[in-house]
Length: 318
Length: 100
Ligand SMILES: [Fe+2]
Ligand SMILES: [Fe+2]
Image (cartoon, rainbow over all chains, first blue to last red; front, side, top):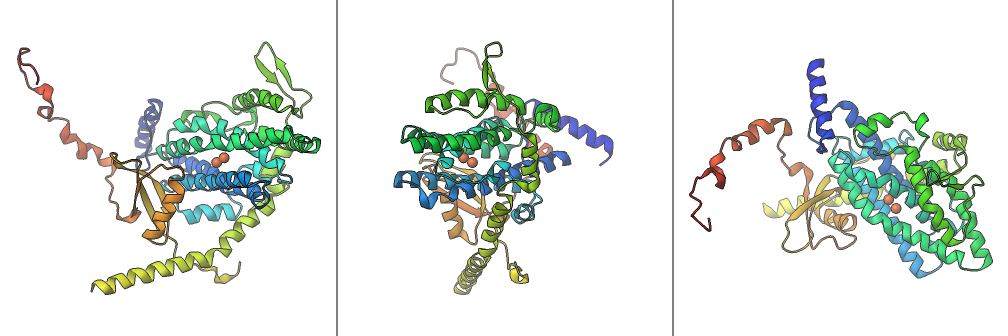
């Protein structure tokens, strides 16, 4: 194809998206669109999968059967989210093995929030409330994104997320109304998870490079800073109901903006964790790689069994 | 971690179709990997119907699906465009004719 022909196709493509038409896997698309989607969707899938690890840590130690079944169901949902997203990514012509390989070799990223440890039960409450809460704000606009399989996967994901956040908030609520020690545990979890949750929206707008392109392709509808502000504005009143305080001395209602002003985010910490130097980066990746490698014999056995059965069926038919 | 990790074969890809309730058709829900059809059904139950989203599941190995190519949509669907006589509005009837 000549350069001019490609330009022409790209124009038609952009207009299609501007008209709110969806792009489906076999449609023509610019190579950059394909690559960007493979990267973003697989990162999203990896985040769901690695995201099971910090919470899985507490399944066996949940304080009651009610909490345990809820947490199990929540973690199982996250596995499901990962699988919806991997399957949507595969429609772009990349195999599941390649995607796993990128995760396991450290080439692909996943959300940095999962590189923080879950040291107390209250962390499970804080994750559901804050981390799933931030994820919802990031994900809802993606239900209308331009790539069909991604948008459809996100509709399913978003439907399931609200239970996650509510179960987390309920844990926080119970602890906040409990003994002094329980309330302190809840406050401590909020203290540790607040700032990393704000970082989930990514760098500030002036430092964010992909925004214009992402807006055009509807991978983004609001900027990082807008989404972060939305999260803060809706979360502060929720903390007040819990009787917990947000660990930010600069947090203040701004009557003019009808929004909360907030303090400086520690971006050095953010970049450190992104680069692999967070508290749990190595442990998370190692756990994931071990699970994959130790499960290899099971996958092989299942395949051998399936092949044997298929052969048997053919023999019978003859 | 050793070199004996040469895996035999990867689990093939299956497409999943779910009927959400009787009276509705099966609809494509997504795909998954499984060693055989029985496992694909079980995985489909766990991945796509955790909240009673379905009363019936079909799985078919993706390689058995033949798909049309959207780049040929012109030739493929165009013949329908010039056959206006397939639509009721093509036929001129006087207004007095009722129930038609
Ligand atoms: Fe999720
Ligand atoms: Fe979630």
